[in-house]
Length: 291
Image 1 (cartoon, rainbow, N blue to C red):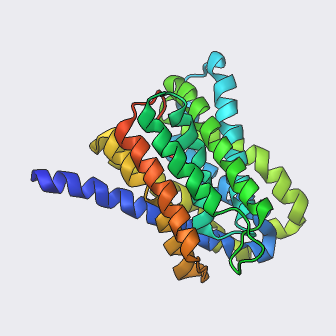
Image 2: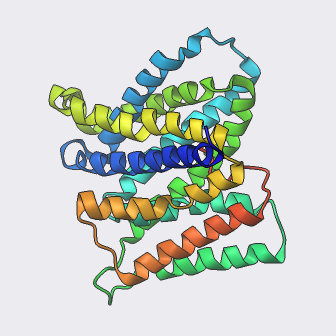
């Protein structure tokens, strides 16, 4: 394999992974009228946990009781992140939600450095957030609750990274399977309470399974391959493109049109995120595998 091919293949896999995740989010939004954001999250995490357990067989790993607090924290933050993110999609566009969610790991990365240049990235991120502040005089103003939910998902993403690193040191690749099971156990009762027996409708299974595969099984696998073949900094910079891919996905699949100011806001947050990845050596990876 040539050097250029060795670089281009993992980049292509990472792009496919990001497109898959955002396509899965678009597909998931189509389930909201039937079972709501809570039911959709419950099905995605439950089916995702089942797929990951069948593939990874986490029960074969040795139990480490000392690592369970971190593992529980990882799973609870994963479940909360997914639930808050899907709840935000009820009232704000997909691209905006992903951009707001990105502020969580961005702030986490910035906390590890105190250089003057870092304040440039902070200023860019704040500028992007300022552009997204609701303006009742504009036709494209955003719902404050939806924005708050997306920012809450970003906080959970930061916690997910912190707990994930601790749990991953003990359980390795099995952490994802264990954590997804914990996340499903957290969210499934909420989805069941909201929907009752409707959650078990066979008609929902094909779409729900598609969401689980597109949003979890396929992208997680592709991202892991790319991560092992790309420098961490290159991986992080490429991941910064995800809000733009989400916005395009929302436009193509959901008809979500954004105003010029909203596109500018997404661009500012992407620039801040890419800048952090290029210039900072954080204690935590600002774009640890998500969703």
